[in-house]
Length: 552
View 1 (cartoon, helix red, strand yellow):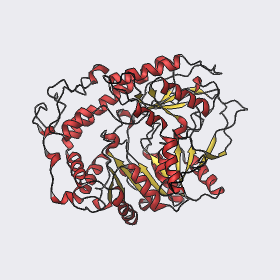
View 2 (cartoon, one colour; view 1 turned 180 degrees about the vertical axis):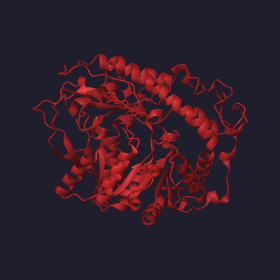
View 3 (tube, helix red, strand yellow; view 1 turned 90 degrees about the vertical axis):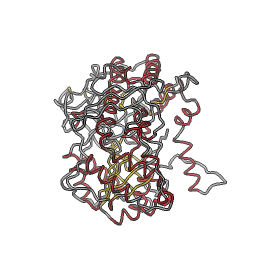
View 4 (spheres, helix red, strand yellow; view 1 turned 90 degrees about the horizontal axis):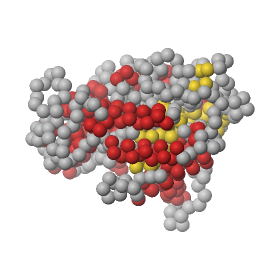
């Protein structure tokens, strides 16, 4: 896990006059209702931090260039937990005492559905209807249980239950043509870009059809971040990004482009001007931009993740419009990562893509990315797409696709999958959402039983968990020690510093896993916490609640 240093600037933050500050009525699943617990003599939370990714780098390899040494150092310093997990990975039969991974954000709940769609030889098994889920156990998938898929609601179809030989097990994914084996258009084959444009037009609810010529296809969003940073910024320039954020973006923008991130720090405490914990406001963006400029750092853009990782927050259309207007005022590019767009499992959340807005304030500087890694549980397949109306940006990124492109066969499979709207709407998405919701309910109830506050708003694969009361001292050193205790007890979580959270003690816990692994992982989490002394709090116990309806 990376603990990259930041230059930090302070701002004065005072608690409002009222003793008790609770979530405003209608807040959506904040998971926190608390008094303002910051003492008068405590240091105020920092408002921004200018990233210095190599501040802890000490020495290089005699066999590598200075640039190569820094790249190797990133790998060595940032992948400790992930490497440890892969050396001792849990397996129910072969390694039952291995590490359970609740730290990596992958959807492991729907492989059975996907394997039947992409492989005609994959076994079929009984899958519970999304309308008939009665227990968490019903979500377990076993390849030994053969049978047919039950009928799911099909308002425009009278098809029979899905059995071997039906359209989900067709061989349409295996076609090979000469053109797929030759060098493609580096933007991606036209047939794929046309299909992606139709797909995103429908699911993003764009007011007008999206144009294939504005699409570029790459091997995942990591490559998109890297390519965009390289073509939009000079070396040493920066992007604003709300923190906590998915920490690997630091590497994505730095390793090739030498671009930095300016963290816009968000506060867990609800103040009189906010309606929920960790809320991003235009005021905070303005303060961070001014602070970075005062340090001589040129900011070229803003990165937004919606739904947000690790918070699971979803920006309202009004909030998105405000952030985009801010960027336009300052002539900043906006990179919008919507990789969890179809993983919003609470119907009341009301997710809206930035591409659904009637008018983008600055379409030439607004760049939207999406991938199948999260929404379709295909993080190993490496498919991502960029939509931008700026032809110069699209062409520059496409040039880098020589190094980040997809094989023709993969492009063909992606087009076949994305055009199967009936399967996506009637089988995959309802079942995926039902399983995500059931897994989320299981973990949130476990956390509630332990009296642990958390933030979760019905989107993504993770819960942002407040373990501050288990730190003897509020330091990142203690946070890492607690993380190591989890790892020693064979469960991997992600600690807050890896997401540039400025409050020690927050952890991301991924719940999108199968029943037996999730149960065992939560048992191991409980064992660590029950053996960990709690720090006395000055405030009454914090309440944890289920969603009460839309927060906006």
